[in-house]
Amino acid sequence: MEKKFICIRCPQGCEITTTLDGLGAITDITGNSCKLGIDYVKSELSDPRRTITTTVAVTGGELPLCPVWSEKPIPKDRVMEAAAVIRPITVAAPVDINQVICENILGTGINIISSRAITKGGQ
Image (cartoon, rainbow, N blue to C red; front, side):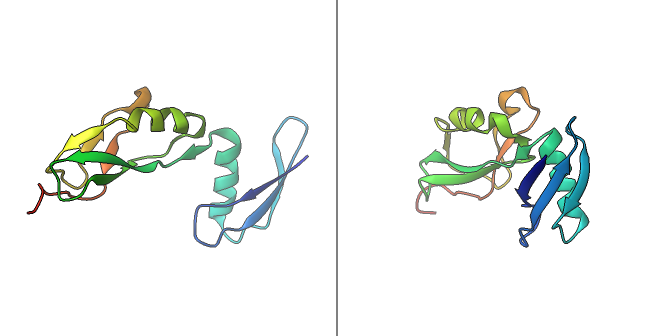
């Protein structure tokens, strides 16, 4: 059986074709231009993960939203669940860069952190 992937490990975006045996083991990988493509396919087949990037509301800040991200990729099948947890979060200014906004999201051991500092309004 063949499975096709577009590698997201670097900007090149290689189109990778993987051949699997009847038990799901990889028998051939083609189309990758580097080892990252092989690692990507292996992880996608065994434990697909994604980094979450979104925003949270800020009260009393110079900006109404603060960009946040997961400090490590979370399991792909839990991304929408994590987004639902993050959506209602509101933080008060000031917000520091790399401030933990949501600790241990969904019990994964992964924190959601700010990727920008937000000062109090007008400062």
